[in-house]
Image (tube, rainbow, N blue to C red; front, side, top):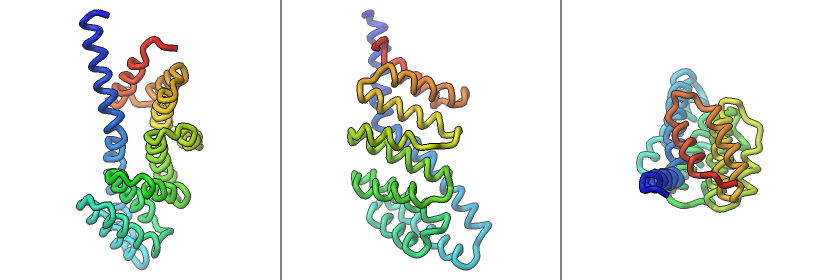
Length: 212
């Protein structure tokens, strides 16, 4: 292998390692930002009765999220869920709580919180966000079959790129290189050409090399 090829491979390995460590948080930050915007919009458009009370409790969850204290965030989310579990705010609160739990390395609690969103959210996008995060957790725990089961769930076409990318990660971890390449290619094809996320998927495909 030439020195140039070796240098390129080292760069690919470094980027893959960075993505494995930080990729789910990149997605998480983007998703949480969208959820915060959606929650604010919902609050402004529906401040009456129980919705207003639920909105106030959600605001407390968001406030606690700034503290990065998983217990305080979880407690605030639980208070909202126990009183207004059917509100649009409840699954958003649980996603914030799950994010905090994962940052605190409390995988068991995060799993419960994500599963709650999957089972109770009325919005498909929130369910898919929770599924992707849960599948990522299961991948980290080396529970590959369980992760793939989550990724087998029906989902909107707009999420196919993310589902396929994560499927590629799981298959790659299982040593199923050919299947991983197919999944990554599907993800690459589904992601908008202008989205830099495609470059990360390309790096993953390059990292598979010529292995079968």
